[in-house]
Length: 385
Image 1: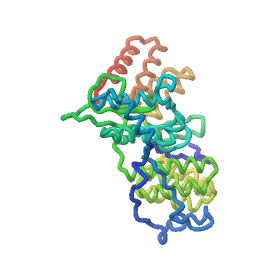
Image 2: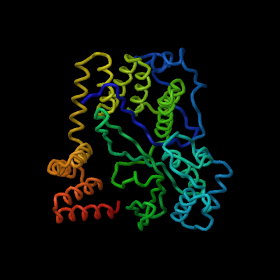
Image 3: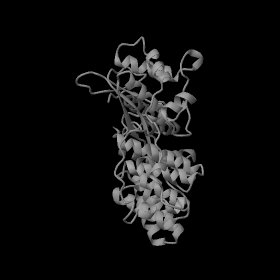
Image 4: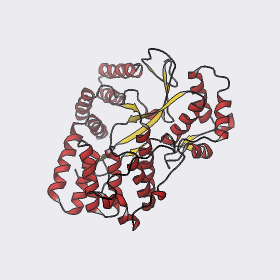
């Protein structure tokens, strides 16, 4: 696997509870092996000043937003009906009386900005919805969903690990055991997602701690700013993220990538290694280290991390799925079938695997097994979680 020149960035689709979240006590800022990197002097030309760090009202509401939420749910008495009415009002076209919020992958912004612009990514929409839902008295929380890694087979065989968030509204019922996704018939906790195509109930997910969601918000925005060329602002956002949470290795990965893009390679190495010490199984960092060591001419170290990432990749069912897709495109049905069967054996709850398997069996003329895969797909889509 060629890692040269490619940065694997963990983009965390998440949000912060509010701007008044108490910051962690600054760590490793004045002394220690990361003092220089954390001070920002190599990027800013001097140590950063605390007052320069961003402080957005991430979970705020305007009077207009409060009125909108109240009006949209005026006819709903039950919690589930309120949640559905609010979601519907936010995404319904303005010509039909809704707010008309549409999906936009660009810019991690606050809920207030999303309401004004009438567009949002999953972070911004979740922030907007949760803020409004809580105003209505609903027990709404931020739900982090870990999406499977995605491989780009054409771009130096690299992958991107994404995190995604949506809103979860807890229903006031005893003995809750199911999750309801808007649009289904389940009656239980409700998951609200601007991009339902991203959500699968069987993906690993959890309610996010307020400090961690703050760190993820600032980290995500910092990477956007750095990618836009505003490295100074990107550093300040990432530095704020690390003040909110020290234990998220993917934030250290992003922080190191900012230094690497500035060709501050020894500093990037120190940062990456610190992140890896927090999470020794962070393959994003390993991938970045492999590329970094190639740039530094440290061939042995690069090969070591390439080998570890390759072993992880080859054993990952989503990589097998990607290879099966490629084999199918090339007309190698036998190889495609072998790969997708291995993927299903390792991860039996991924709908895309069964869909691809059915397609392969169809092309092989094996209608019985194709129908069996579709049955599996149907059963999976109706599982209650």
